[in-house]
Length: 197
Image (tube, rainbow, N blue to C red; front, side, top):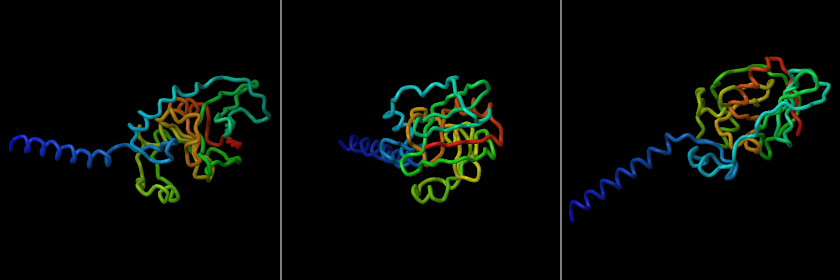
C-alpha cells in the first residue's frame, strides 16, 4: 500500500511540474473567437475553418498605377494592381472592431522574417507580451512584412491560416505566409497602399 502511494505521489508531482512549465514555453496566439491570447495548439484544435482563401488573378479596372496595393477591409481582400486592367487578389485578415482604419500611405520598408516589437499600447492591453520577439515561424509577423508609412501598421504574414477572412488583428493586414511572400516579390519600397473601410 505504501509503494502505491509513493508511485501515485510521484506521478502527480511530475504532472504538476509539467503543467507549471508548459504554459510558459507554449506559443501564444490571438484567438478571435474568445478575443484573448491563447496557447497556439489549443486555438488550432478549436479553429478548423477550412483552407485559406486562394489568391487569384482578377479583372480590376482602376486609375491607380500598377504596383499599387488596395485593401478592401469590409471585403477582407487585398488587390495588387497589375497591368492591363488586372489585379492579383489575396484573402486577408483585418483589424477587429475598434482597430480598423483607412487612408493612403507608401511602403517605407520591407523585411524577410522580421523581428517584432509590440507597440506600447498593445503591451498595455496584453501585459504578458514580450518586449521583443525575434523573427521566425512563431513570430506574429510571419515570413514577410511590408511597413506602411509612419503608421504602426504592416502588411505581414501569419502561420495561422485559419484567421484569413476574419477581423482579428490590432490594425495590421495579414496574409498567409505563402501569399505575403508572393506579394513581397511583386512590390517595392515606395509602393502606394490605399486602405478602404
